[in-house]
Image 1 (tube, helix red, strand yellow):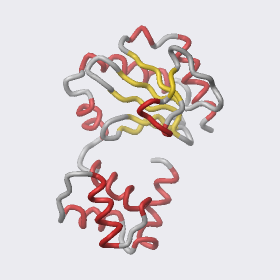
Image 2 (cartoon, helix red, strand yellow):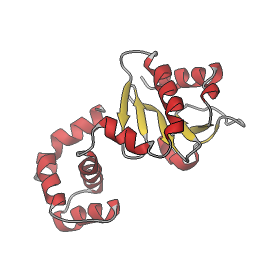
Image 3 (cartoon, rainbow, N blue to C red):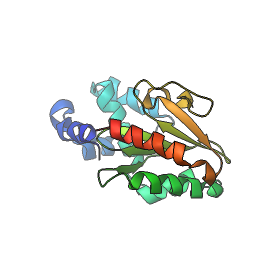
Length: 180
């Protein structure tokens, strides 16, 4: 788990009056159709700051799903993309033991000390790979971050395992090295 997130969870009882487990029980007793509804509920009814409310809601949604289940859910109906996903994981795992792979509801974060890549099955035929760089221009292949917003600075679209080539591996390594 990311150190900043762990610190936030550790500080939760002091800053919000309840532990993460207690907040999860509060949220379970209500039903929300959207993430923002639950966040606004915590802010309005419990005076929780936006940062804590957002974290509580996000962690509450993921509590019932293991990392394996989260990935399985992402690729349900997109099984043809799993070889690309697994190929990307194989590349980043070679960088060092300090690489953390963190599946979430719709994507998988690749973290060193900071997130340096994000893997997301965007369609049934395409994976969007978000990468973080410092001052790197975009190219035809290394596009702007698009739907990733500020989570990543660039995006590479992948539809075939062969697109995990030396150029892409160099970009991932550079992003990993910058995330220390």
